[in-house]
Image (cartoon, rainbow, N blue to C red; front, side, top):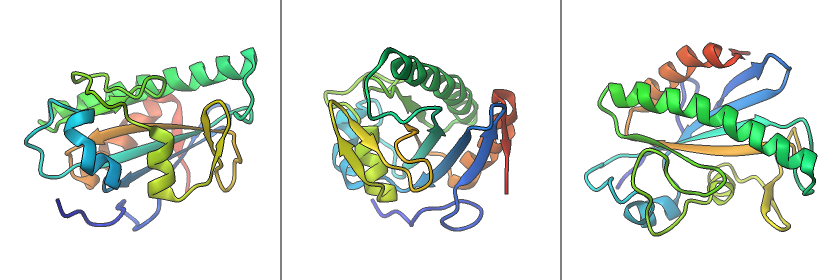
Length: 184
């Protein structure tokens, strides 16, 4: 597979959003990491005929630094996971309605939510590290270090065969339904 570099309407610029509570959300569209290319059928066994795939990285700013494990932090992770899944399902079904294979990866398990699970889980943190070159702290689990938010970042991933311009358009059209407004 031959993939062009990161794409959005402005080259190398993610979609910047902000929620009602002021927490930032960054969404960027990338060609897949080497891991996804090498393991696509092991991660998404239903996806055998797709010639082009795109990785949509959704980074949500957390209220707390996520390197510790406390009940409060676990509650925050669950809140962010649920927020991603509501948004991710809307994005995925919108793209699927347009006949584009799309799936979201459960951040907790690493398995797809709309396809049969593969024999290999997806590692959101490793893919964000590979595609955005963000450092990772290895504790009980791997924690990303965002250049502005530190470890107060919750990563999530969607995979789609839709062209980046379509992913971007649908993302921007549904973001307000999830309380996210675009900022420049």
